[in-house]
Length: 133
Image (tube, rainbow, N blue to C red; front, side, top):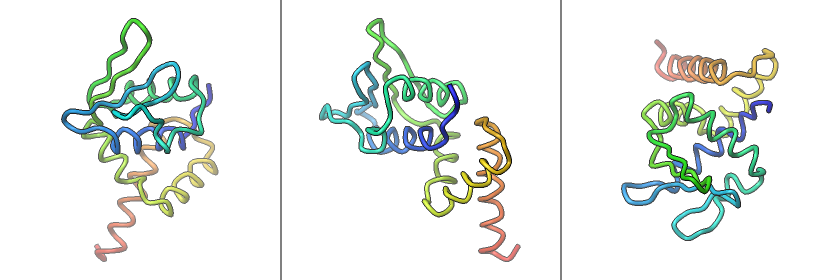
C-alpha cells in the first residue's frame, strides 16, 4: 500500500485528541473509537485497511508510545511517543502541512523518513525566520 501522509497526520491528531492517562485510542475492525464509541472525526474518511496499515507504520517508526493488538484484532494505543509529539507539532499547522506535503510530493519521496526530514527542515527554517538567527 502506498503511504498516505494525510492518513498518518490524521491518525496522530486522533490519538493525541483521544488519549489521556486513563483513555486509550482503540482501533477495531469496524472503526477507531473513543471512550464514547464514536469514530474520530480526523480518521472517519479512511477505510479500515488503510487505517490499519498506517497505524502499524506509525508504530514501527516510533511515533506511538505503546501499541498492543489483541487476539480479536483490536489495537490499543496508550499515547504518542515523544518523537510522535515532536513530529505532530511540526506538521500540526494546516498552512505548514500544506507546504510540507507539497514539497514531499514535488521531491518524489514517499517514505516516513523523508516526511520527518522535510518537516524538521521546514520547522528549523520557520524558527530561523522568526528569530532572525
